[in-house]
Amino acid sequence: MSSHATKNMFEKYTLPTYTRIGPIFTKGRGSWLWAKSGKRYLDLFPGWGTAILGHCHPRIAKTLSAQAKKLIHLPNNLYQEEQALLAKGIVERSYPAKVFFANSGAEAVEGAIKFSRLYGNGRYEIITMTNSFHGRTFGALSATGQKKYKQPFKPLLPRFKEVRFGDLESLLKKISKKTVGVMIELIQGEGGINVAKRHYIKKIQDLCQKNKLLLIIDEIQTGMGRTGKLFCYQHYGVTPDIMLLSKGLGAGLPISALVVKRKIADIMKPGLHASTFGGSPLVCSASQEAFTIIQEEKILNNVTGMSAYVFNQLERIKKQCHIIKEIRGMGLMVGIELACDSYPLFLECLKRQLIMNSTHQNVLRIMPALNVTREELDEGLHILKEVVDVFERRKSPSTRR
Ligand SMILES: Cc1ncc(COP(=O)(O)O)c(C=O)c1O
Image (cartoon, rainbow, N blue to C red; front, side):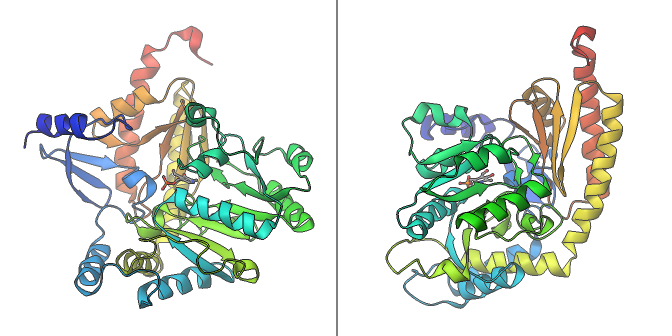
């Protein structure tokens, strides 16, 4: 089938929810994607941050293939080993908890909202943050702190109280008798890579403990080694009451998890919540293998080393380029704030066979595979520098800092 024909089929048969661009991709391996034409692309944003071990890691592919021959799916009223082992693996690597499995980030967020209602027993307000992103389902969207996603769907669910990310005073003021929890990303991803300060998060935990509020940490983007520790909260000296995982959890496969502190977990009773596909043996086996690979291939060391390298190189580039305002992030979650719209730069990178992401109007986001090499980063940074130079030349001196 020609590329033109494929694109036409998308036009004709799929809902126009996405602005699709680029060629037709047919194959991926590690940090690389191949288009139908045979052209190779460097992917520094594989699977929207889900492919933490790159595309089609051979051990994930092997695990999936073996599991597919044994058992693909089982309803959640029957027992299987894979889900039990994965839940145990997550808990042993985080904190005493019990896990509920679902399929997407938003579904985990919905689970957290429902759990909060049970825990609150009459308290139902959740404090959320400006610029946050928790997903597109109705509850998750209501918790999201960005107007552009919410506006067309109003009225949304009430009972979410938004406060400025980083502003402890306004959070304090919003706590009422009806407040049941605080939902926060430690690093806002879609919101432009904004890193929360350690003392701010510690203070939020103190406030939560004092007021019997749930500290709900959305690690959907930051979890699974992305920031150099397995879970980002481990950098902050706090422990969530509820942690939300997805994206990297399945190393590219659809899975999410609601990780609820053990001492409150049994508030949830049979029949109150469910997900038909959640925690299937197929995806759980892949997720377990991802944890094993992270450990055996010393992936967290690579994140730390490559992170230092990429931040260093980007700071060097920034010194030579006026349109780069700030470099932000942690581990291999990197944001480059520009003095201009980031989407045209993203498009120009794509033309030059480099895939990154443009978010929050003026931020280029890089979230490479956690096993990315220095050579791959060098190649990406080289293309990025060329593109920044092109845009730099286009800018008039008056718009420069
Ligand atoms: C922090 C965070 N929470 C929730 C979500 C929603 O996840 P999903 O798109 O899988 O529903 C995302 C997606 O980008 C996210 O980054």
